[in-house]
Image 1 (tube, rainbow, N blue to C red):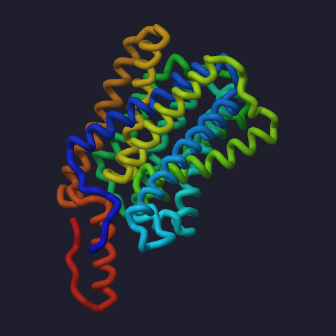
Image 2 (cartoon, rainbow, N blue to C red; image 1 turned 135 degrees about the vertical axis):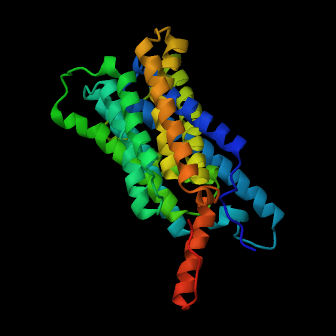
Length: 349
């Protein structure tokens, strides 16, 4: 019997994972703002990834040790998916996704902010990700997009634009600076699609361990070379590091890849439309910033776009929507095998 790492979907778990993703991912803005008065963004990012890697590697080593104790007759094996995740090919796949989704995505966002790109402009560029992922996933992953879903994708961009309208102003940034948030959006999109196409072995936490460790090697090394690694001796900096490590790091990325595994690359990307308006709520709670009527209207439009997209998926292909990504992959392999043997196969609708 083959054990598959992707569990069957259930509505309560999917809803909880999606809600956690939106809340935790949006908290990254608060962490960046908490650390802005104490260090540069590269220093904050390096310590966030470095500490997260140490914590996750310690967890992975402890888990492997416990698994080895339970299976003393199989020397050299860590048991379960932990053994398979250490294979060179799987490690390389996870490392590639991690560098794209953590190092290049976060590095591009932080570098763009340092170069003077307004936050609203960066958010609007990031809002293009669902469009990119949906079109790429339709080619590489075979995920069909209905007309209602395409309308929902553009409606979400409009909602995000309304939320960040006050921040869309002419800045002193050079033209090339806008390529940084654009590149970061494309990096996260590529990492998301490749993770779903490769489907490397391992649980979400195991995958996250390799993701962050690979990204930490790149970011911490680069920050050290440029002499920006030394942390400031202020409690506020470490409070910001703890915030971005636990909430947006473990919580945000953990929920992101959980939703991607359970619902698909396009579904998790559409939820990004809810993060800019949720960020406004975070700013209101943490910093006392007002909630404008325009932001509330944008939030409603983004929520409507997500609802349209999810209902469009179930209406356009109810049989396929109930199947897990893993089951659809097995069905595709079975159909290819049937054609190779000259047999007759059924077509999924």
